[in-house]
Image (cartoon, rainbow, N blue to C red; front, side, top):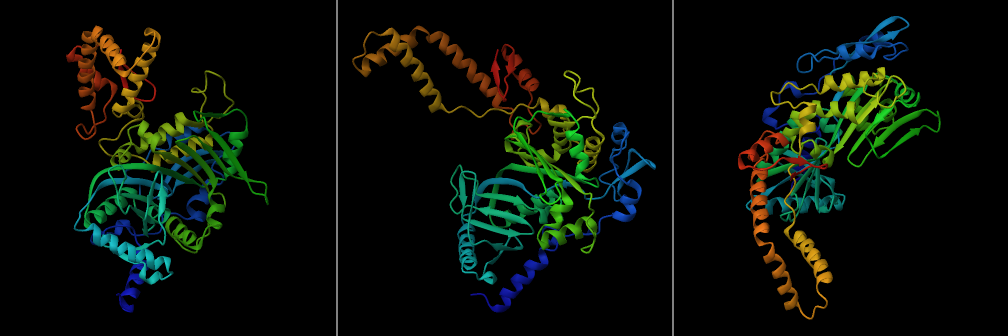
Length: 509
């Protein structure tokens, strides 16, 4: 039984810890503490930009001015904007106004140390029951060096139900009470409160340390969702006007889109275009912040404006790409290391190939020659700035497009059913009447024996092919497998040319 002093300590520690970045306590450093952003609406941006988009603007100026300076310079980056009534404008990219947004999700596969897990489950059960009984003071637990608040109920993620949900620093952790072989024991969601203060990859490292300290042996991680965003000091009407000016939107989205307008003002506040695995959302950030809860509002003002009492700019728009697992897998992004090496290329593809707003009406066959609308060129410049990569293994858009995922081995049971179905069709036409199963098996044996040598050659060929292709996995070959690499691997074996079919995978030609 905890004493009243211990209960007070847990609550106080939770409140204190949650005002800091999500980092292992003995690794806290000044670089990751909250600090005022180098930004003043009245002096730094509004005074020099005016309206960032105006008539007669040159979108090429934005592209040329968007080169990042180092690893995110400590002062706002000035970008040459389009002409206005007072001459060329300068647009500044304030520090921290772009990056990963809350909503990034992942699953972790592995095993719990049997010496640790029973004790953890016991703690979680007690805290969960206390939360259900509205005894908040008893619903805190210590986990991995941090204090976490355990929720009263579990949650469903995909096909699986997680009994335990706990939260700290804006990180939601889902723990399965009895994980089987095919169930990820741990899932995580990094929320806004976490990523507003902590770099995503630093937060991931911290979480892995927490899990390891509690006896979790990590074997595999898979990203389920990633949200990447930038904020621009521009009214959402600039986007709406560019989109509605004519047939100026180029997109590969085969889903739908929605526009939401305010009943009071009639102004469009949100534009969303989505498919099954990727989504673009452009919305009025000022309105969203002003109607948010006090915690979100205070965190936003303190983190992005440098002062809890700061005034949120009225002409503030957020552009956000939301990528789900299938979209990420298409480009070989399954782990956080994959994401770190591919982020710049991913948003380049999304903002250039998946969705564009043109400067003038589309002409069939000439879409690629028509320049982007100034507001979209500014958006691309912002994504380029905030997601600039300096790592040596950074992948290019061409690398992502070339990537072909290794298909999972087909189910043997499913293939047997298919083969039996084909043989049944042959027997139904070839035999006048079947009296028993023995007669059917005898007929199948005769059919197969006639093609035995041919079948043997095909089996040997496919076994060799599978052995080579399966060798190009991330665990054995950290660099990404491509069609050309596998082709080189098969060439010495005398295999013919093979081709990649849509959806990923290979077949012998």
